[in-house]
Image 1 (spheres, rainbow, N blue to C red):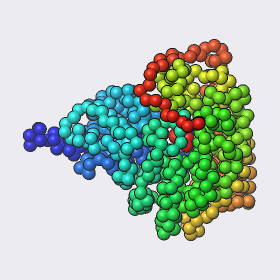
Image 2: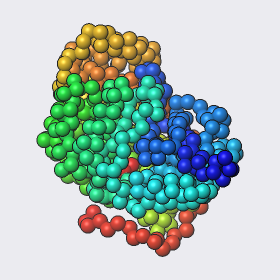
Image 3: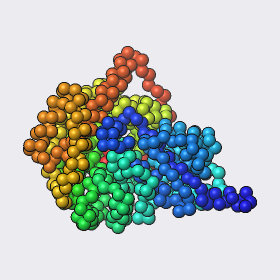
Image 4: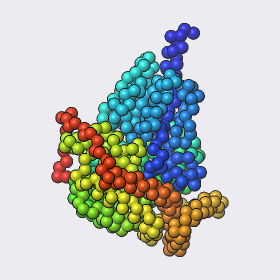
Length: 558
């Protein structure tokens, strides 16, 4: 065979290595002690890479390495003709390391994903850049590769990818036992206009949805591969297109009933979910058990300024309680550091978290993400630090980084408020009190057939391990844990599973909160000692795109 013919064949049927970079190992979302208790190695598999794999030609031979669950070996890289990688901001450092390592072994690298799409210059060293939604651009890359291209940049038209043409992800490329749960996606985009959010910049304000048949086919495929249990709808706002989700949920309910309720679902949704009793009822009947929502701030002026109108003119505590009444518990995001904050922000935020009885509250410092309205405004105002990653020392963790701009309120006051919030909401008494009150309000409705005895017995060792770990975390934690466990078992045993899920996460949340406090103490000491100097300001310039016009008034958070 001529060398040219062999090269043509290898280009049309290459060996392709898909690499999912490591996340920052020390972040709020790591949850390592929790997922290890379940025997897993990471939280969730790389849905984006599995979807990309399904879009590639059948003739391409694929392997997937998730660096969050296993090592990337030189043999894996040397096996490949081409390496595909990329991810989100918290994966940036490892993504760049993967590029360098693969190129050092003589392998071309193609990069894609949300962070490369927002920050292509950071990844200029890659051989190929595929930017935007893969469904709208991957065919052009494949054609270029098979034609012999050595480099290239391919930009998808924004917000135009047809998600109805998106194939079933290649779930067969992963080991389900490595993960706490598996993700699927129904929609992309969000109708809201939160200033700090990059979701509307990446996926648009008109949520595009898959067909009902597509989604049920994905669930069927998971079952065919032997998976049952927790499935997360990774949508940034599942209810962004209410008409579509209300058409899908009745079919999902029928599917669950017909199959004996093999799955329990989680998702992310905006807080206005609480206003729609019909939608809450459908989600409950489909066996949704938890929803993450972006609350951000209890301050009305701040909510208006950040353009989060869906959270204004409401009692946050009452809204959360309506979701609990549907049998779905809430985790939530909060942010400290907005321009409109006045005086003491710690007290109202702590009161909001406690009165809403939200056990797992992700509180972060405001960070101007690339390609957002917030970033563009701060740059126009001459307040954005040069290099968006400045003051984010742990690669995307907004608990120990953030505030990458000149603040209007004294920086040290913001950090002190933030420190107090973290310290108080994750003190053992406060955390377990929220769990206990949540279980009093949670109206979990058991669905499907009762667990058979052998299934219950299979869960018993896990329960015993969890109780043991929490017991040996120290006398104070053990006392609050057992008081909460016994209270829930007596008063609302149907909520015991939800209570244990939240309390197991405390194995990570308590030590992580102490880590954040130590980091904040160091930064506060630098500020008060005059040892911190503000980084260079990014020069203002005329923007190519106008800031979105907002009439009157995830999203990092939906």
